[in-house]
Image (cartoon, rainbow, N blue to C red; front, side, top):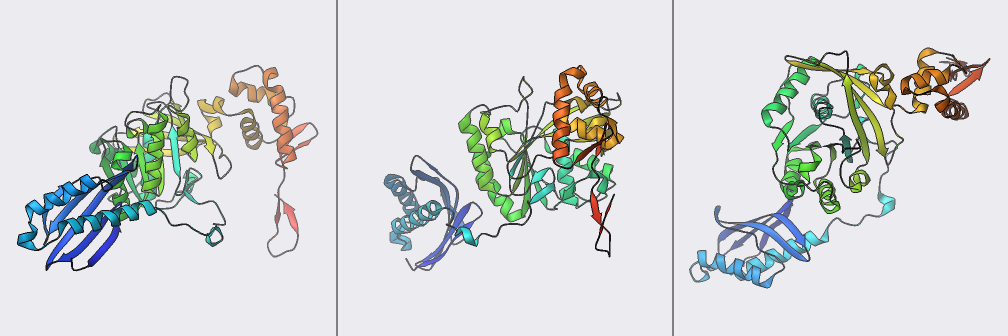
Length: 426
């Protein structure tokens, strides 16, 4: 051996180059996986630029590596080419094993830069560099909504009426459910609904194996293509069909962490209309939204999509959101609505309804508020009277509401008069 020239990490794998007896030898290592202490990898060997062997030996097995170098020696005997294949394979196996097991380097906590604000990919929907989830029944519009978010990120389109702050970037759509033509058609229609006339840069990949199996290739794609967000449609098939099994779900989220970046996972509901699968689905998601819908104006081409924030770890829960989706022959248009203006208002909590009603209608008489809330929830006012009273009490305590002459109103907030050192109400 004449000495190591290159050993570096490339995407999810490694590149090993060496010159031996005047010949250039290159090993491309991918799909490195360790199970039960056995480290296995797929290795392709190129000799002077031409492939000669492709195998998947167990790097920690003496017999496995012995069989690998003997296979190389049969192709290019040492007596003819002067290459010590046994030494080369031993060096390669050791370097890959050491590098893989080294993992991420340790970090001194005091050296970590802490952002002053929460980092959002799409505020207030998706947390940056975190696993986000949207779940709902089939036909709720969640996949179309996820693609709409992808178009917003990809295009950098800004429309204040959407009530979203979008950090632009490239998106990779991983599809286990439909096909490329359907997704491309939806993206085209969504762009038309926004008035965009440009070629989308969203990347699409049809998937047939579990995310855990695909993770090496996907990590490479994400790195090479500078992907900011990955969308997974949907969780059930992406786990390999083991959505109710803890092991499969944990493998899925481990793979997401390995791939890196922001992710949005689409999944379904069970018979009880709860998020389907193992409790680890909820535990591993950092921000989870429930999607549900109702016909908007009775037209099959129009529906109201409601989004309810069910779980979050590093920020407070966000207020419910609603969008009107309008489907025409060659466009899909989304516009913001207040949930209280849809048939989904019954999904709001008593507290949410109290604030919505008072903020929209102005001062409300104390005795009338329970009736107004009950109308949305389709219950008798006396059943929610105490809950309304408690909600108002909490809002008053937080200086968000006030009561005057038997009327409940949004509290007056002061603001500083520009150029003067005093405050005024507004």
